[in-house]
Length: 199
Image (cartoon, rainbow, N blue to C red; front, side):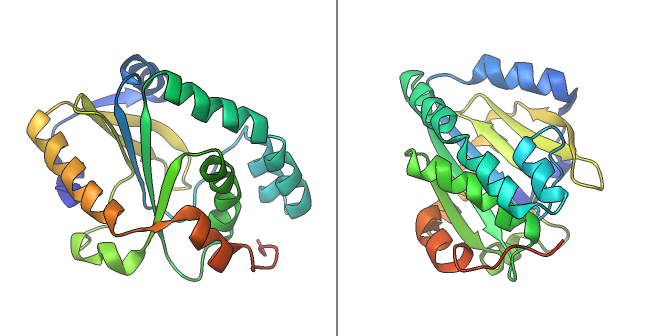
């Protein structure tokens, strides 16, 4: 099912409408996220801006400044009854973006969010025609396929409300998740040892 999400009927939303729909449903549920692309653009995020300009040390410092906000976000999710299950697909060698993103993911994991990593070969059987999409599943209510332009900047999402499709996608994602490695273990072995990325 994960490999067929792009073909399912859905309602396309702009970024603001996607954000509103996400917030409306984000309470008392299990939040699933699958991240497959290896490079994104995140204009407006100070740490990403520093990274994109080639200032790795500043990117790390700005990321570290987010630690308290990240702790509060994870605590707030718990208060709202939200359990997070984020799965990050990684290819090797890791892209500069992924090396940067993992710094933030480490903060989330250290704050108690459950993030896991799976190597790309583990999902290849689902990618005969194309890479898996970037998806968010909110409980059994809704699935969003997040949409990006060719440069990797998010511009909206497609909302899918078919309960059967959501359940099948969630089951496949859960199977991948159970076989994946914890983010912190992966970070220490593969990311912490890397030199600053060359853009």
